[in-house]
Each structure stands twice: as structure tokens, then as C-alpha cells.
Image (cartoon, rainbow, N blue to C red; front, side, top):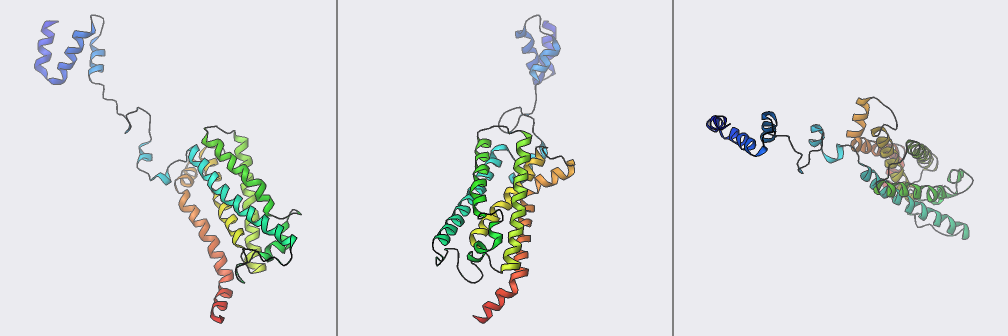
Length: 260
């Protein structure tokens, strides 16, 4: 054992550590175990843990990485609250209008920004009662779901499918109301636009999260593209809506400005 120690010390500093390991390990420790103990070079993550990480994810901006449960929870809470507040405002204006036909709604700003016509139209009560009450009932469900995610609860697949179906229905209603506003009434309801601005990302992020968690099955390539480009694609959705409004109402708005 002594001869071996002398040889090892001559070989270099790294092997000297191996010799020390043999001296303290006792007669039952093997040479292989000593080498492994002295030369353990397992890589660690930046925070000192040995968790497995995807190297590609470390190079991505935060907005392009997979969505965590808490991140999805905050999104649901934020946009759910925005939609809920706008729905409450619309419901109050509808109640005041019913109580006093001469009431001028706070969202009636000019001939193009006016919610009175929208509330008085049949499209404003598709289910037999004012549309805002749909939002008053539905958005709290979205907010509650976000809170549950923040608490770390894993929701079942059927729940995500139901939530996604609800956002699809909401988006369909929004598209119909946008068409009604720009093509039929020729007026935009400010509070309605706030609801639109909340529903679009709620639909989009619910879709992306469902695809990411494989609640909705798609190809790996499509899944990666949706998740990593979700913010850019959302901006694209907003751009489509803005372009739609400007193309249809732009000429009338321009004429009004020239006549003023």
C-alpha cells in the first residue's frame, strides 16, 4: 500500500487526492469508488441544484419558455378581473338606462364611441338578458381558476377542456359583437372593447397552455411553435382586430374628422 502511495504522489495533484481517499476509506473501499469520489465532476445548475434542465430553454427569453402553472394563474386573474370590471360597468349602465330612458351612459363619448346603441340592440341581449351579465357570471370563474393555480393545485383534463370550450364560446361572441359594432351599428362601445381585449388573451393563453400540457394533442412541432411564439401570435391577433376596425370604420372616421 505504501509503494502505491509513493507512485501516486509522483503522478500528480489530482491523483494525490485519490491516495488520500484510499488512506481514509478503510480496507473495504475499492479503487474504483475512490476514483469516483475524488473526481466527481457532475454539472450543477446555476442555483446549485442537480435538476435536469433543457439547455435550449436556458437560452430563451422568459416570454418564450414554457408557461408555469403560477404564470398561467396570474394571467387568468389579471384578464379575468379586467373583463369582470368592464362587465360590471356595462351592467350598471344598462340598469341606469332601464331606470331612466334619458340617462346618458358614461361610455357615450362621441358619435363613434357610444355604447347606448349596442345596449339597445337585439345583439346586446342574445340570450334574452343583457350580454354584460354573461361576463359578470363567467369572469369570476376565470379568476377563481387562476387563484387555484397559484395555490399549486393540478386541475384535471376535463376541467381544462371545459375552460377552453368556454373561452372559445366567448371568443365567438366577441367576434360577432365586433362585426355588429363596426359593420351594423358603425359605433364602438368603449366598455365592450375592454371586454374584447380581455377575452382574446384568455382564449389564446388557455389554448396555448392546454396544448403545452397536452390536454389538446397536436404535433410536437406545432406545440413548440405555439408555446415559444405565444406573445408574438397574440400581438398578431390584436393587430387583426385593429385592422378590421380601421378598414371598415376608417373612412367614416376620416370623413367626420374632415367635416369637423
